[in-house]
Image (cartoon, rainbow, N blue to C red; front, side, top):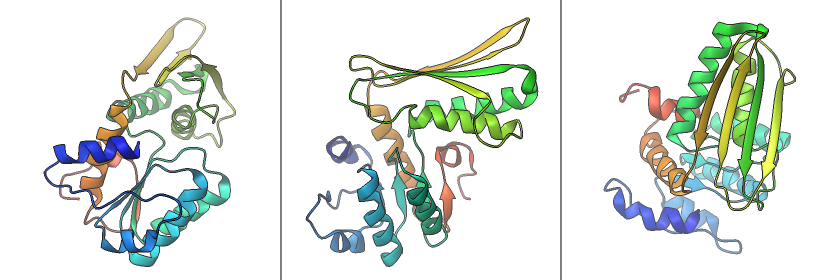
Length: 219
């Protein structure tokens, strides 16, 4: 993702690549000089990134999945100090899907059983995927449920699939299906760069791709 983002920055006239951080390098120097930071490292690296952006008061776009409860708590704490956009999936299409399933689940209620199915490449470590959990959490919250216990997850790992997600809502008389497929990982790069351009100048707080898509341009 880092290399893909670096190659794609030149397509965004409002962005300029300052540098790419790798383990062993001075992250403080890089963050201090940046206007916005994009993090697609690993959970352990994100801990250091969060500490550093808070130290220097810089906005952060974080697309790291697999964060544990402690790391998520650190992320929430950082968002009180700096503008922080965290999303398990940077795809604009997934943001639309998330809003759609939220509205559908809120309208249909608990009479409809919900299943979130996902297929990813065999190298993916977390299961269910962060996006599947994100969709399940959105559905649960829209129905006033705590946790995703009422949502069934189906996980498959196959070949080099970038990411397929399907949400089905089923009653005794009908079935409603929402689906999204990624054809190239470039979609995550494009979303991250759109988020980076959007978050500059925002007030401290926790944001998501929903905000990038649906908030007022001047908010």
